[in-house]
Length: 353
Ligand code: FNR
Image (tube, rainbow, N blue to C red; front, side, top):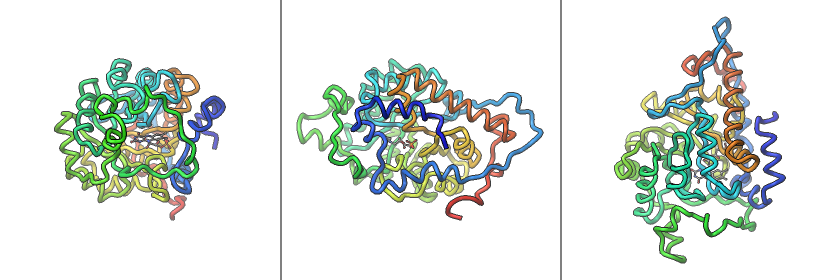
């Protein structure tokens, strides 16, 4: 299937340094999880309704008190500065222009303060818990002060996944962009670098601690099982993001599209459940929303758009996804996201069945 972002993808492939393109594109291990992500959405089938008034379709979405114009959220991704000189400042500006929400990575290439000033819409801060807990907490506090409305704690990365396909190729991140948000807190040299590594000993207590430190709700990203989602909520999480990190962490992890129903069933409406991984069209999002997702994060297509056309490209990519979703919802007989429910999805063609 031709993805909506095919034009941006081709431009990015042509214009980005090959090592940067490979870094963005890559998955871990044999890239099984990366390969299966989009196919798992495409394997669901729809059960449309008819004779509904779908003359206008409303995509308005509410996520933890933030209202957006569509359910598409920009996923947190490292080093946007490699795709565009304005980096995350361009991404948040373009996302706000589309009426959407962005999640800004700990590994952003611009400072949280610059990003907050450039934002034209709501944004959340993605936290990694680093060996130096004080460093993590300082970042969360800076993000809150700069305008972030929630913290997204990524928990699938006790160690960074091995991306064999790009190993040996070092991406050249300019000094002024490398972990720019950490630099001011770190000692120079090896000691500083080690303090900024993810802490593999992290346990659920960190959820309440970060919520306390930042005064913001904490969502947990990187959950693929119902019981783990409940464990996060019991520890104080305000929501979860079903994700396998775009196939960049545990290879052969289940596709998000297959994990989502289990997580939704276990969470049972206690908190919003978002999802990401391989979402490339309005129809993919329709399936996710009908199953019960509150929002849908999009990763790589945003980087291709940013590399191709900067902030305008990000706006265009999000608007194209929203237009596609609006269209398929109308044809499926849904005039708003509130009309979507699991009865609209048939699982009979899922690869696992
Ligand atoms: C990521 N992702 C990610 N996630 C996170 O929590 N913190 C991060 O810093 C990063 N960095 C990152 C860099 C790059 C280049 C990619 C492609 C991805 C994962 C990201 O948030 C998201 O889970 C996936 O990218 C979603 O899958 P798709 O839409 O890219 O298929």
